[in-house]
Length: 228
Image (cartoon, rainbow, N blue to C red; front, side, top):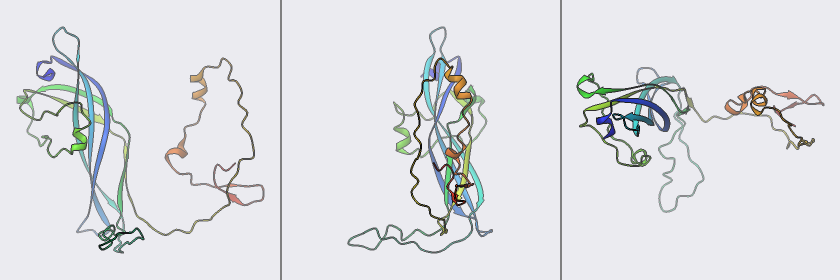
């Protein structure tokens, strides 16, 4: 393979393919849960083989992370009106109002990448096993596991938010439909630099986090944030 014959390697890109999440209650501390997260990445690089042009290689990286979060307690069973003919309503029989783990993540940053001989690798549990078929199908060819003389070690920088969610009942104020009252005039931007225009655009915080404030209308009533 190209990795076996490579003299050096140049980092490429990394893409987050999938995140597997498992939640288990902490036995000695009620209300707390362990969240085991496994990230699957597709990483590309350029392998330099002699004086020839670099060969693009693509591989799989896996990262495991465990956190302990508070999710409170709840043992109520949940049933719904979705039809299930000929048997018991098995759709939610094993479902309760226990918290659900959610992971928000972006594609990682490739911090470093190095080519190491297998004999120089320190003993570790880095062998990849039980790769889901959907992950293997994201690559153009079959993945090669073990038996090689060289390996590529990748260091990735991952930004993610891990949280626990729980269904609950809330009383929220309701408002009528909000209809636009103004028309946006489509004018010409002239010869202005589009990059300069983009620099004056505020970061869309509300697209990532719901707004927590209300605006007040002409009649003194609270209106949803951003209402026309």
